[in-house]
Amino acid sequence: MTIAEFISNEVTANEVVLFMKGSPSSPACGFSAQVVRILDHLGVTFKSHDIYQSEELRRGIKAYSDWPTIPQLYVRGEFVGGCDIVTEMFQSGELQQLLSAEHQVAHSS
Image (cartoon, rainbow, N blue to C red; front, side):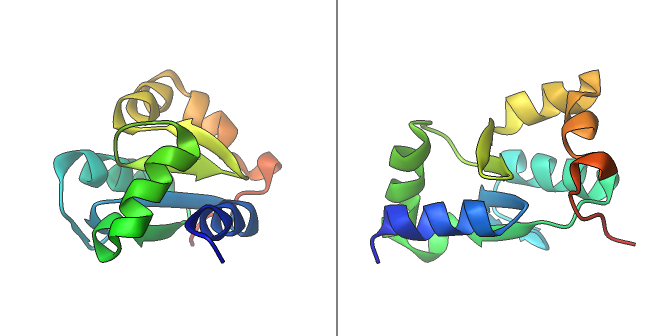
């Protein structure tokens, strides 16, 4: 399996996927920490991948999305954006709408 196939499988098999620096419990950069805080605040269950665990993944995710920075958030197979876009969407309410229960994204209890 190529890295592009792995990424494609991950973003289609999981409702919400965050490619980040570090882990949700220990983010390795402020931008990743910000996106994790937003998702946690909204109670969204998400899968994460630490791009530091694989140089192939680190390069591959940037090529897959054609987006140069990390973190990268995907919802139902679609690239949402990085920290700035996710933060703006959260502040405007767009992210909450995208992740709402009627869109069937799992929320933690």
